[in-house]
Length: 459
Image 1 (tube, rainbow, N blue to C red):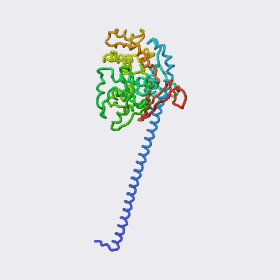
Image 2: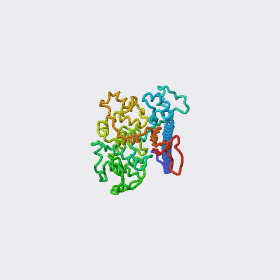
Image 3: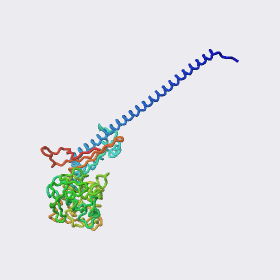
């Protein structure tokens, strides 16, 4: 057996300690290396996240800017299209005159703006339709793929019932015009009326509201005095008596009337009696489809028979001839609404050159090329169950009824959208092109060719 000397043992212990120190140093280096790799990985991940976020933000902002420019461009193009309406009307006038027997009124060119401007807003998808129509835009400079699309919807404001101070009426004439329209719209001349459940019941403030209460409160909101308006639907007169703010002082959160024109349609909800049910029935039937709206705050006082919904036309007619079967018999009213809707769906062209043509229509008068005689021939005569009974307009009201309608739209709502990627921009603008407009004092000037904006909102 080999014995080790103390010297040898000491050498062995020294070698053991040395090798252990080397191993410890190697372990520390490995830990440091792994730590460095982990730190670098975290820094790389953070850099990648920051870069990706910055890229996504930049892309989103770029797309949002492009979408905004597309929406703005569609409005500008529509303004130019409306400005060229007289030239377009002159081009198609011979064809329309052969069809209707009358010279055409203002053409609702804004209703077809989305289709006419498709090559500028959505060139790729409109290409096939243009080729089918024999139109070649391929060589037009500036048209082509734009990386997005835009759409435009145009509406004539005089196709609705005005609840604001009329632009071109003053005093009792303005108050009476609105009172007559509102009372008829709410079915005041029908007994019973399908709208009866909306009235004579308590609202959220514990108040009872009748049709006449709402008519008076709507007018008192924008008229300049402090007196309550009273409307007599039989005599068609308006008077003033009492304090208009008394009812609002009893609300839980009391306030007073504005005594100035409405600034937005939503402001109408502050008026006494305008409940959610009233709003959904008369003001905004479908929030997604502004064409269903029946009220406006931008009206001039007249209703356009070529644009207004049949229900709006019926309300305006019945405000003058409330005792006629067309206004008192729900079946006759339904015939009128269905007939006008059907005619427009078959021939979407303006039939009434002037207000007198529409009055002749509801009276069942006119020549062979007028609308009512044409419908008589198509539907089998006056005994047809599909055609409404003509009204008889008293001679003392015929002038007022005729002046209640206009066949040209000068104030338009334009709703434009631009879409690029996930970016969506919507613009709502109210365009005024009325030649009677003058700027507020102390300014002076005339209406520009492309009109002026009453309202502009971008979302």
